[in-house]
Length: 348
Image (cartoon, one colour):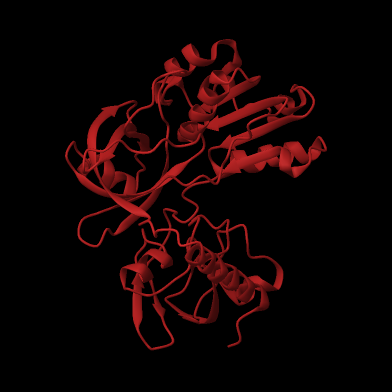
């Protein structure tokens, strides 16, 4: 099956990127480093905070607001890979911390987050990536609106701290069911003062996001992280108010995993069969089997892992923001998309 033109272009760009690095003679830096859980702290009934340090005791690098890391865990073979935002200090102007702070919400299904809550204790060894920032906060803009839903507060807290430290104008809307289930409310109240609005849906209902946007000063840029439905609603509200799409910036995690997911198998061109578990992505399963792949964001946003599909005994379940139109019939992003059948033949 010929490789679609757009897919070929993506892979050519990846190859050029690697060649450029080699021409510059830059040392190749391992994406992952050995780390250890330093401490853990219960924030709410479902949310626990973890401080992660370098296994060799060295200070970890400073991360920009909006950055996240990939966390590999789950025993031999690191069977889970998850993305977690780096929160940083909980007060503005704090001296740089030598560790990374993340917060993990435990989901009902017994998968990655459940494993973390149950097994990650002080002293537990991990593999973590260096900071990745695909949700970068602009340095200068007239006004910033931050919107967080639930555990989506983690990158938003880092952005709020950055804005407070740089004395930039902003407002923050933090939405959750009730304060008892929302992490870092007190820290945010101290840090943000009147710029913070906490909305408890159990008491006040779901906020009118169109009204929220309409009340912002001219040229406001919004940053939102939380449930995909809330993000979509904010985007729709912006469109209704004629906001250009670039004024609403967002980050979605966990697009790859849903409670109803079922395991299936991937067959490669050389005949090898790789099992993809319900809590694993195709990309993670292939990497675990030693298959060479291209990947970067792992959230269906960059398109680097887009792979041609030869056949499938079910429907392709696209969970990315890349594939559209006719492309959806013969290619997929293997970092987050799945199938509804039992066997997927890939052009790998």
